[in-house]
Length: 442
Image 1 (cartoon, rainbow, N blue to C red):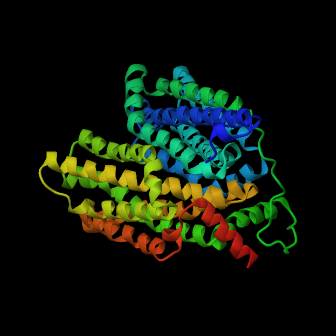
Image 2 (cartoon, one colour; image 1 turned 45 degrees about the horizontal axis):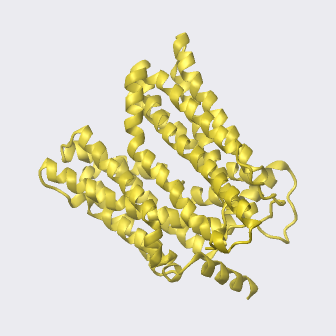
Image 3 (cartoon, rainbow, N blue to C red; image 1 turned 90 degrees about the vertical axis):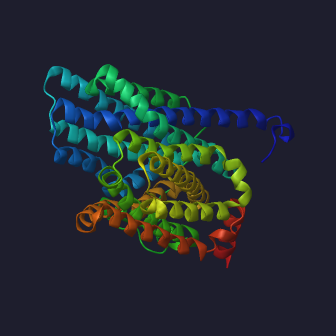
Protein backbone atom coordinates (compact mmCIF):
# COMPACT_ATOMS: atom_id res chain seq x y z
CA UNK A 1 0.00 0.00 0.00
CA UNK A 2 1.36 3.44 -0.91
CA UNK A 3 2.60 5.46 2.04
CA UNK A 4 1.47 9.06 2.34
CA UNK A 5 5.08 10.25 2.56
CA UNK A 6 5.78 8.91 -0.95
CA UNK A 7 2.55 10.18 -2.51
CA UNK A 8 2.39 13.32 -4.64
CA UNK A 9 1.35 16.30 -2.53
CA UNK A 10 -1.81 16.78 -4.60
CA UNK A 11 -2.96 13.23 -3.86
CA UNK A 12 -2.66 13.44 -0.07
CA UNK A 13 -5.80 15.60 0.50
CA UNK A 14 -7.78 13.36 -1.86
CA UNK A 15 -6.69 10.24 0.03
CA UNK A 16 -7.45 11.85 3.38
CA UNK A 17 -10.88 12.86 2.10
CA UNK A 18 -11.63 9.25 1.12
CA UNK A 19 -10.47 8.04 4.55
CA UNK A 20 -12.77 10.56 6.23
CA UNK A 21 -15.66 9.49 4.01
CA UNK A 22 -15.09 5.83 4.83
CA UNK A 23 -15.14 6.74 8.51
CA UNK A 24 -18.50 8.45 7.98
CA UNK A 25 -19.84 5.31 6.30
CA UNK A 26 -18.36 3.22 9.10
CA UNK A 27 -19.97 5.44 11.75
CA UNK A 28 -23.36 5.23 10.06
CA UNK A 29 -23.16 1.46 9.69
CA UNK A 30 -22.00 1.04 13.30
CA UNK A 31 -24.79 3.13 14.81
CA UNK A 32 -27.32 1.36 12.60
CA UNK A 33 -26.03 -2.08 13.66
CA UNK A 34 -26.30 -1.30 17.38
CA UNK A 35 -29.72 0.29 16.93
CA UNK A 36 -31.01 -2.73 15.06
CA UNK A 37 -30.22 -4.88 18.09
CA UNK A 38 -32.81 -2.88 20.02
CA UNK A 39 -35.46 -3.58 17.41
CA UNK A 40 -34.52 -7.26 17.17
CA UNK A 41 -35.42 -7.63 20.86
CA UNK A 42 -38.01 -4.88 21.37
CA UNK A 43 -40.30 -5.80 18.48
CA UNK A 44 -41.04 -9.40 19.60
CA UNK A 45 -41.18 -8.29 23.24
CA UNK A 46 -43.75 -5.67 22.25
CA UNK A 47 -45.81 -8.46 20.69
CA UNK A 48 -45.42 -10.74 23.72
CA UNK A 49 -45.75 -8.26 26.60
CA UNK A 50 -47.87 -5.45 25.15
CA UNK A 51 -50.16 -7.49 22.86
CA UNK A 52 -50.02 -10.89 24.62
CA UNK A 53 -49.03 -12.59 21.34
CA UNK A 54 -48.99 -16.37 21.00
CA UNK A 55 -45.94 -18.42 20.00
CA UNK A 56 -47.33 -18.79 16.49
CA UNK A 57 -47.74 -15.02 16.15
CA UNK A 58 -44.19 -14.38 17.36
CA UNK A 59 -42.87 -16.99 14.93
CA UNK A 60 -44.86 -15.41 12.11
CA UNK A 61 -43.39 -12.02 13.04
CA UNK A 62 -39.87 -13.41 12.55
CA UNK A 63 -40.86 -15.18 9.32
CA UNK A 64 -42.36 -12.04 7.80
CA UNK A 65 -39.12 -10.16 8.35
CA UNK A 66 -37.06 -12.93 6.72
CA UNK A 67 -39.27 -12.90 3.60
CA UNK A 68 -37.58 -9.68 2.48
CA UNK A 69 -34.14 -11.28 2.77
CA UNK A 70 -35.10 -14.28 0.65
CA UNK A 71 -37.96 -13.25 -1.62
CA UNK A 72 -37.13 -9.65 -2.55
CA UNK A 73 -33.34 -9.58 -2.40
CA UNK A 74 -32.89 -10.25 -6.14
CA UNK A 75 -35.18 -7.36 -7.08
CA UNK A 76 -33.47 -5.02 -4.62
CA UNK A 77 -30.17 -5.92 -6.28
CA UNK A 78 -31.53 -4.48 -9.54
CA UNK A 79 -32.59 -1.31 -7.72
CA UNK A 80 -29.12 -0.89 -6.20
CA UNK A 81 -27.49 -1.21 -9.64
CA UNK A 82 -29.93 1.20 -11.27
CA UNK A 83 -29.72 3.97 -8.68
CA UNK A 84 -27.02 5.87 -6.85
CA UNK A 85 -26.09 3.87 -3.73
CA UNK A 86 -25.58 6.68 -1.19
CA UNK A 87 -29.12 8.13 -1.54
CA UNK A 88 -30.50 4.60 -1.25
CA UNK A 89 -28.73 4.16 2.09
CA UNK A 90 -30.05 7.49 3.35
CA UNK A 91 -33.62 6.69 2.27
CA UNK A 92 -33.34 3.26 3.87
CA UNK A 93 -32.23 4.76 7.19
CA UNK A 94 -34.95 7.42 7.14
CA UNK A 95 -37.59 4.86 6.15
CA UNK A 96 -36.64 2.58 9.03
CA UNK A 97 -36.74 5.51 11.45
CA UNK A 98 -40.30 6.37 10.36
CA UNK A 99 -41.54 2.77 10.53
CA UNK A 100 -39.98 2.19 13.96
CA UNK A 101 -41.08 5.43 15.62
CA UNK A 102 -44.66 4.77 14.50
CA UNK A 103 -44.84 1.70 16.80
CA UNK A 104 -44.58 3.59 20.13
CA UNK A 105 -46.79 6.37 18.77
CA UNK A 106 -49.55 3.91 17.85
CA UNK A 107 -49.04 2.13 21.18
CA UNK A 108 -49.39 5.47 23.02
CA UNK A 109 -52.66 6.08 21.14
CA UNK A 110 -53.87 2.63 22.27
CA UNK A 111 -54.47 1.26 18.76
CA UNK A 112 -51.43 -1.01 18.27
CA UNK A 113 -52.29 -4.41 16.78
CA UNK A 114 -50.29 -7.40 15.54
CA UNK A 115 -51.20 -6.47 11.97
CA UNK A 116 -49.08 -3.34 12.17
CA UNK A 117 -46.18 -5.25 13.73
CA UNK A 118 -46.28 -7.69 10.81
CA UNK A 119 -46.20 -4.80 8.33
CA UNK A 120 -43.45 -3.07 10.31
CA UNK A 121 -41.33 -6.25 10.46
CA UNK A 122 -41.62 -6.74 6.70
CA UNK A 123 -40.76 -3.13 5.88
CA UNK A 124 -37.82 -3.12 8.29
CA UNK A 125 -36.50 -6.32 6.71
CA UNK A 126 -36.87 -4.92 3.20
CA UNK A 127 -35.16 -1.62 4.05
CA UNK A 128 -32.37 -3.49 5.86
CA UNK A 129 -31.71 -5.52 2.69
CA UNK A 130 -31.55 -2.35 0.58
CA UNK A 131 -29.11 -0.72 3.01
CA UNK A 132 -26.91 -3.81 3.21
CA UNK A 133 -26.70 -4.29 -0.56
CA UNK A 134 -26.15 -0.57 -1.17
CA UNK A 135 -23.35 -0.05 1.33
CA UNK A 136 -21.47 -3.15 0.19
CA UNK A 137 -21.78 -2.07 -3.44
CA UNK A 138 -20.81 1.50 -2.49
CA UNK A 139 -17.66 0.56 -0.56
CA UNK A 140 -15.43 0.05 -3.66
CA UNK A 141 -16.20 3.67 -4.56
CA UNK A 142 -14.58 4.90 -1.34
CA UNK A 143 -11.55 2.60 -1.09
CA UNK A 144 -9.02 1.07 -3.43
CA UNK A 145 -9.04 -2.64 -4.24
CA UNK A 146 -6.02 -3.36 -2.06
CA UNK A 147 -7.77 -1.71 0.92
CA UNK A 148 -11.06 -3.60 0.64
CA UNK A 149 -10.06 -6.41 2.98
CA UNK A 150 -8.98 -4.03 5.75
CA UNK A 151 -12.09 -1.87 5.43
CA UNK A 152 -14.41 -4.89 5.34
CA UNK A 153 -12.76 -6.19 8.49
CA UNK A 154 -13.55 -2.92 10.27
CA UNK A 155 -17.18 -3.01 9.17
CA UNK A 156 -17.47 -6.65 10.22
CA UNK A 157 -15.82 -5.90 13.56
CA UNK A 158 -18.60 -3.43 14.36
CA UNK A 159 -21.30 -5.92 13.39
CA UNK A 160 -19.69 -8.56 15.60
CA UNK A 161 -19.30 -6.07 18.45
CA UNK A 162 -22.99 -5.19 18.14
CA UNK A 163 -23.78 -8.91 18.45
CA UNK A 164 -21.88 -8.93 21.76
CA UNK A 165 -22.92 -5.61 23.33
CA UNK A 166 -26.14 -4.93 21.44
CA UNK A 167 -28.45 -7.34 23.29
CA UNK A 168 -27.26 -5.99 26.66
CA UNK A 169 -27.89 -2.42 25.51
CA UNK A 170 -31.28 -3.42 24.15
CA UNK A 171 -32.22 -5.15 27.40
CA UNK A 172 -31.24 -2.09 29.44
CA UNK A 173 -33.26 0.28 27.24
CA UNK A 174 -36.28 -2.04 27.26
CA UNK A 175 -36.10 -2.29 31.05
CA UNK A 176 -35.88 1.50 31.43
CA UNK A 177 -38.39 2.54 28.75
CA UNK A 178 -40.57 -0.58 28.25
CA UNK A 179 -40.68 -2.53 25.00
CA UNK A 180 -42.65 -0.30 22.60
CA UNK A 181 -41.05 2.95 23.69
CA UNK A 182 -37.46 1.66 23.64
CA UNK A 183 -37.85 1.64 19.86
CA UNK A 184 -37.48 5.43 19.93
CA UNK A 185 -33.76 4.92 20.58
CA UNK A 186 -33.48 2.78 17.46
CA UNK A 187 -35.30 5.36 15.34
CA UNK A 188 -32.86 7.99 16.61
CA UNK A 189 -29.91 5.78 15.69
CA UNK A 190 -31.11 5.52 12.09
CA UNK A 191 -31.43 9.31 11.87
CA UNK A 192 -27.80 9.69 13.02
CA UNK A 193 -26.73 7.05 10.48
CA UNK A 194 -28.53 8.90 7.67
CA UNK A 195 -26.89 12.19 8.69
CA UNK A 196 -23.45 10.59 8.81
CA UNK A 197 -23.81 9.08 5.33
CA UNK A 198 -25.24 12.31 3.94
CA UNK A 199 -21.97 14.11 4.80
CA UNK A 200 -19.88 11.84 2.53
CA UNK A 201 -18.27 13.97 -0.17
CA UNK A 202 -16.53 11.47 -2.47
CA UNK A 203 -18.32 11.47 -5.87
CA UNK A 204 -20.04 8.19 -6.58
CA UNK A 205 -18.76 6.23 -9.56
CA UNK A 206 -21.25 6.74 -12.43
CA UNK A 207 -23.34 3.69 -13.24
CA UNK A 208 -23.28 2.43 -16.81
CA UNK A 209 -26.24 0.82 -18.52
CA UNK A 210 -26.93 -2.56 -16.93
CA UNK A 211 -25.39 -5.29 -19.09
CA UNK A 212 -27.39 -8.32 -20.05
CA UNK A 213 -26.23 -11.84 -19.34
CA UNK A 214 -25.34 -12.34 -23.00
CA UNK A 215 -24.02 -9.41 -24.98
CA UNK A 216 -25.44 -10.72 -28.27
CA UNK A 217 -28.94 -11.25 -26.89
CA UNK A 218 -31.37 -8.45 -27.86
CA UNK A 219 -32.73 -6.30 -25.05
CA UNK A 220 -36.06 -7.82 -23.90
CA UNK A 221 -39.23 -5.79 -24.26
CA UNK A 222 -41.23 -4.75 -21.22
CA UNK A 223 -40.18 -3.59 -17.78
CA UNK A 224 -40.76 -6.98 -16.17
CA UNK A 225 -38.61 -8.80 -18.70
CA UNK A 226 -35.83 -6.22 -18.37
CA UNK A 227 -35.84 -6.59 -14.58
CA UNK A 228 -35.63 -10.37 -14.81
CA UNK A 229 -32.89 -10.05 -17.42
CA UNK A 230 -30.86 -7.87 -15.05
CA UNK A 231 -31.44 -10.31 -12.18
CA UNK A 232 -30.22 -13.09 -14.44
CA UNK A 233 -27.09 -11.06 -15.24
CA UNK A 234 -26.11 -11.00 -11.57
CA UNK A 235 -26.80 -14.71 -11.15
CA UNK A 236 -24.93 -15.74 -14.29
CA UNK A 237 -21.90 -13.65 -13.31
CA UNK A 238 -21.69 -15.74 -10.14
CA UNK A 239 -22.29 -19.00 -12.01
CA UNK A 240 -19.62 -18.27 -14.63
CA UNK A 241 -16.92 -16.97 -12.31
CA UNK A 242 -14.83 -20.00 -11.24
CA UNK A 243 -14.20 -18.71 -7.70
CA UNK A 244 -17.61 -17.19 -6.96
CA UNK A 245 -19.34 -20.34 -8.20
CA UNK A 246 -17.39 -22.51 -5.75
CA UNK A 247 -17.97 -20.05 -2.90
CA UNK A 248 -21.72 -19.97 -3.58
CA UNK A 249 -22.02 -23.77 -3.49
CA UNK A 250 -19.82 -24.16 -0.39
CA UNK A 251 -21.58 -21.33 1.45
CA UNK A 252 -25.03 -22.71 0.60
CA UNK A 253 -24.15 -26.14 2.00
CA UNK A 254 -22.55 -24.60 5.10
CA UNK A 255 -25.54 -22.28 5.73
CA UNK A 256 -28.17 -25.01 5.34
CA UNK A 257 -26.67 -27.27 8.00
CA UNK A 258 -25.56 -24.38 10.24
CA UNK A 259 -29.17 -23.14 10.20
CA UNK A 260 -30.33 -26.60 11.25
CA UNK A 261 -27.86 -26.47 14.13
CA UNK A 262 -28.91 -22.99 15.27
CA UNK A 263 -32.61 -23.84 15.00
CA UNK A 264 -32.41 -26.90 17.24
CA UNK A 265 -29.55 -25.87 19.54
CA UNK A 266 -31.70 -23.88 21.98
CA UNK A 267 -34.09 -26.81 22.41
CA UNK A 268 -31.10 -29.14 22.88
CA UNK A 269 -29.52 -26.78 25.41
CA UNK A 270 -32.68 -26.50 27.52
CA UNK A 271 -34.14 -30.01 27.32
CA UNK A 272 -31.05 -32.20 26.91
CA UNK A 273 -28.18 -30.19 28.41
CA UNK A 274 -30.47 -28.52 31.03
CA UNK A 275 -28.83 -25.10 30.64
CA UNK A 276 -30.46 -21.88 31.82
CA UNK A 277 -31.37 -18.98 29.47
CA UNK A 278 -28.48 -16.99 30.93
CA UNK A 279 -26.02 -19.76 30.18
CA UNK A 280 -27.39 -20.09 26.65
CA UNK A 281 -27.00 -16.33 26.17
CA UNK A 282 -23.39 -16.57 27.33
CA UNK A 283 -22.75 -19.35 24.82
CA UNK A 284 -24.16 -17.37 21.91
CA UNK A 285 -22.20 -14.28 22.99
CA UNK A 286 -19.08 -16.35 22.30
CA UNK A 287 -19.76 -16.18 18.57
CA UNK A 288 -19.75 -12.38 18.63
CA UNK A 289 -16.55 -12.37 20.68
CA UNK A 290 -14.93 -14.64 18.10
CA UNK A 291 -16.06 -12.29 15.33
CA UNK A 292 -14.46 -9.30 17.05
CA UNK A 293 -11.21 -11.24 17.48
CA UNK A 294 -11.25 -12.27 13.80
CA UNK A 295 -11.80 -8.74 12.53
CA UNK A 296 -9.21 -7.23 14.87
CA UNK A 297 -6.50 -9.75 13.97
CA UNK A 298 -7.09 -9.89 10.22
CA UNK A 299 -3.96 -7.89 9.40
CA UNK A 300 -1.86 -10.63 11.03
CA UNK A 301 -3.76 -13.64 9.72
CA UNK A 302 -3.60 -12.20 6.20
CA UNK A 303 0.02 -13.41 6.12
CA UNK A 304 -1.47 -16.81 5.32
CA UNK A 305 -2.73 -15.45 2.02
CA UNK A 306 -6.31 -14.78 0.91
CA UNK A 307 -7.02 -18.34 -0.22
CA UNK A 308 -5.47 -20.08 2.77
CA UNK A 309 -7.26 -17.79 5.24
CA UNK A 310 -10.60 -18.51 3.56
CA UNK A 311 -9.89 -22.24 3.52
CA UNK A 312 -8.84 -22.22 7.18
CA UNK A 313 -12.07 -20.41 8.06
CA UNK A 314 -14.17 -23.12 6.43
CA UNK A 315 -12.19 -26.01 7.90
CA UNK A 316 -12.07 -24.65 11.47
CA UNK A 317 -15.67 -23.36 11.39
CA UNK A 318 -17.00 -26.69 10.13
CA UNK A 319 -14.92 -28.58 12.70
CA UNK A 320 -16.22 -26.42 15.55
CA UNK A 321 -19.85 -27.02 14.59
CA UNK A 322 -19.20 -30.74 14.13
CA UNK A 323 -18.12 -31.23 17.77
CA UNK A 324 -21.14 -29.50 19.37
CA UNK A 325 -23.33 -32.63 19.82
CA UNK A 326 -20.52 -34.44 21.59
CA UNK A 327 -19.81 -31.88 24.34
CA UNK A 328 -21.15 -33.10 27.67
CA UNK A 329 -20.35 -32.92 31.34
CA UNK A 330 -21.79 -30.99 34.25
CA UNK A 331 -23.43 -27.61 33.68
CA UNK A 332 -20.42 -25.35 34.38
CA UNK A 333 -17.79 -27.15 32.32
CA UNK A 334 -20.28 -27.81 29.53
CA UNK A 335 -21.23 -24.15 29.32
CA UNK A 336 -17.57 -23.14 29.24
CA UNK A 337 -16.78 -25.72 26.55
CA UNK A 338 -19.72 -24.73 24.37
CA UNK A 339 -18.89 -21.02 24.74
CA UNK A 340 -15.28 -21.75 23.75
CA UNK A 341 -16.45 -23.65 20.67
CA UNK A 342 -18.70 -20.74 19.70
CA UNK A 343 -15.76 -18.33 20.07
CA UNK A 344 -13.67 -20.52 17.75
CA UNK A 345 -16.57 -20.86 15.29
CA UNK A 346 -17.19 -17.11 15.33
CA UNK A 347 -13.52 -16.35 14.71
CA UNK A 348 -13.29 -18.82 11.80
CA UNK A 349 -16.65 -18.04 10.15
CA UNK A 350 -16.33 -14.26 10.41
CA UNK A 351 -12.80 -14.42 8.94
CA UNK A 352 -14.14 -16.48 6.03
CA UNK A 353 -17.07 -14.09 5.56
CA UNK A 354 -14.81 -11.04 5.40
CA UNK A 355 -12.53 -12.63 2.81
CA UNK A 356 -15.48 -13.98 0.83
CA UNK A 357 -17.17 -10.58 0.70
CA UNK A 358 -13.93 -8.87 -0.30
CA UNK A 359 -13.29 -11.35 -3.13
CA UNK A 360 -16.78 -10.76 -4.47
CA UNK A 361 -16.39 -6.97 -4.34
CA UNK A 362 -12.94 -7.11 -5.96
CA UNK A 363 -13.88 -9.31 -8.95
CA UNK A 364 -17.32 -7.82 -9.67
CA UNK A 365 -17.69 -4.88 -12.09
CA UNK A 366 -19.04 -1.70 -10.50
CA UNK A 367 -22.31 -1.83 -12.45
CA UNK A 368 -22.98 -5.41 -11.29
CA UNK A 369 -22.14 -5.00 -7.59
CA UNK A 370 -25.72 -4.84 -6.33
CA UNK A 371 -27.10 -7.68 -8.43
CA UNK A 372 -24.15 -9.95 -7.80
CA UNK A 373 -24.36 -9.40 -4.03
CA UNK A 374 -28.12 -10.01 -4.14
CA UNK A 375 -27.77 -13.10 -6.31
CA UNK A 376 -24.99 -14.47 -4.14
CA UNK A 377 -27.02 -13.83 -1.00
CA UNK A 378 -30.06 -15.48 -2.54
CA UNK A 379 -28.11 -18.56 -3.63
CA UNK A 380 -26.59 -19.13 -0.21
CA UNK A 381 -29.69 -18.21 1.80
CA UNK A 382 -32.72 -19.38 -0.19
CA UNK A 383 -32.77 -22.81 1.45
CA UNK A 384 -32.29 -21.62 5.03
CA UNK A 385 -36.05 -21.28 5.82
CA UNK A 386 -36.51 -24.84 4.56
CA UNK A 387 -33.51 -25.96 6.64
CA UNK A 388 -35.11 -24.50 9.76
CA UNK A 389 -38.33 -26.37 8.99
CA UNK A 390 -36.45 -29.64 8.40
CA UNK A 391 -34.59 -29.15 11.70
CA UNK A 392 -37.90 -28.85 13.53
CA UNK A 393 -39.29 -31.98 11.87
CA UNK A 394 -36.12 -33.96 12.58
CA UNK A 395 -36.14 -32.74 16.16
CA UNK A 396 -39.57 -34.34 16.66
CA UNK A 397 -38.54 -37.57 14.90
CA UNK A 398 -34.98 -38.28 16.06
CA UNK A 399 -34.58 -35.78 18.90
CA UNK A 400 -32.49 -32.62 19.33
CA UNK A 401 -29.18 -34.47 19.74
CA UNK A 402 -29.82 -36.59 16.63
CA UNK A 403 -30.61 -33.45 14.64
CA UNK A 404 -27.39 -31.81 15.85
CA UNK A 405 -25.48 -34.89 14.68
CA UNK A 406 -27.09 -34.59 11.23
CA UNK A 407 -25.95 -30.95 11.12
CA UNK A 408 -22.49 -31.96 12.36
CA UNK A 409 -22.21 -34.42 9.47
CA UNK A 410 -23.57 -31.98 6.90
CA UNK A 411 -21.53 -28.84 7.59
CA UNK A 412 -18.14 -30.44 6.73
CA UNK A 413 -19.57 -31.39 3.31
CA UNK A 414 -18.88 -27.77 2.31
CA UNK A 415 -15.13 -28.10 2.89
CA UNK A 416 -14.16 -30.33 -0.13
CA UNK A 417 -15.61 -27.73 -2.50
CA UNK A 418 -13.04 -25.27 -1.17
CA UNK A 419 -10.11 -27.68 -0.85
CA UNK A 420 -10.48 -29.08 -4.39
CA UNK A 421 -10.75 -25.67 -6.04
CA UNK A 422 -8.14 -23.04 -6.86
CA UNK A 423 -9.07 -21.06 -3.74
CA UNK A 424 -6.28 -22.41 -1.43
CA UNK A 425 -3.72 -21.27 -4.03
CA UNK A 426 -4.89 -17.64 -4.16
CA UNK A 427 -2.19 -15.51 -2.57
CA UNK A 428 -3.76 -12.06 -2.99
CA UNK A 429 -6.64 -10.22 -4.63
CA UNK A 430 -4.24 -8.87 -7.26
CA UNK A 431 -3.26 -12.39 -8.31
CA UNK A 432 -6.92 -13.40 -8.47
CA UNK A 433 -7.80 -10.47 -10.74
CA UNK A 434 -4.74 -11.12 -12.90
CA UNK A 435 -5.76 -14.75 -13.38
CA UNK A 436 -9.28 -13.69 -14.31
CA UNK A 437 -7.94 -11.24 -16.91
CA UNK A 438 -5.72 -13.93 -18.42
CA UNK A 439 -8.66 -16.33 -18.68
CA UNK A 440 -10.79 -13.70 -20.42
CA UNK A 441 -8.00 -12.97 -22.92
CA UNK A 442 -7.51 -16.69 -23.58
